[in-house]
Length: 91
Image 1 (cartoon, one colour):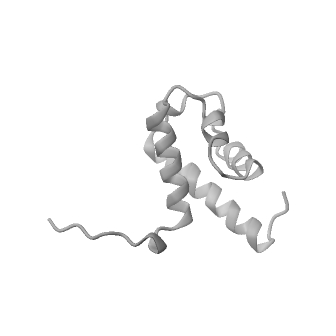
Image 2 (cartoon, rainbow, N blue to C red):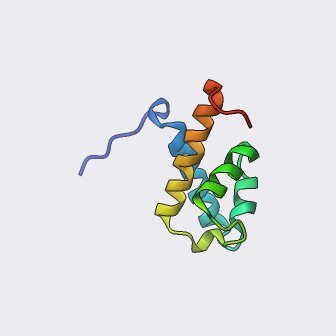
Image 3 (cartoon, helix red, strand yellow):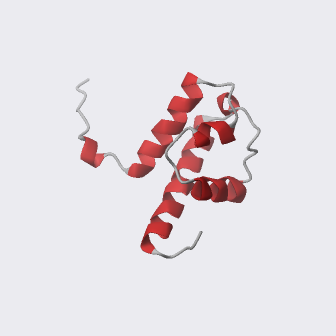
């Protein structure tokens, strides 16, 4: 199977958020979701809003979350970031 290299410009910021969450999950699975999100460069008001809307327990260990759940959280944070950047939401 031939693997193609992915150009960094083609990686969406949403996938970067998901990768950051997966990395936090792998590196320190015993930290809470809140601690993992605080260790990223994501605006706190954006991830707090996403956590609240998705009803994710901030005290839950990130190592216990499924990859699908982390992907959904990352996509939701990305959507709020885009809306904030366009001025559609005020935080």
